[in-house]
Image 1 (cartoon, rainbow, N blue to C red):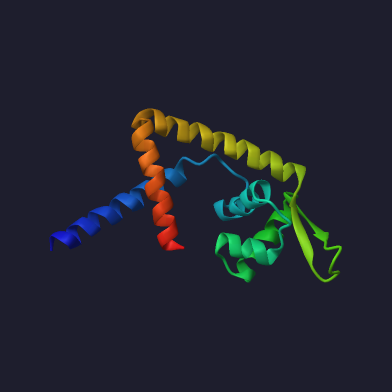
Image 2: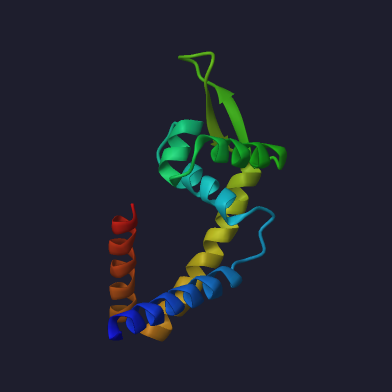
Length: 139
């Protein structure tokens, strides 16, 4: 019974953290999942294809196709034909996409710095290490 109560408490705390974290996001003209695509495009070494993006973000090919279509329609990414294979293409962030990513990244850095200041460096580092470990388990 105590273990169930602890898991229930843990689940409630994680859900609250996720809600609060998502609610403090900067107003973005795109969904957080689409911002994930821009994040990969702007931070990870390419070239990036729809298949590599789907793999990096752990989403299906139809999901990544929908994200790419939405980002293209907003002028945030471009599709460039592959010089090796005329049937495939690479995905690149546009200047507008890079600018959006930079503004959101700046906001994220400010928010993380505020968390670190309130928790202290050691607790913040421990928190990040735990999140990284949980991400590995979930992967």
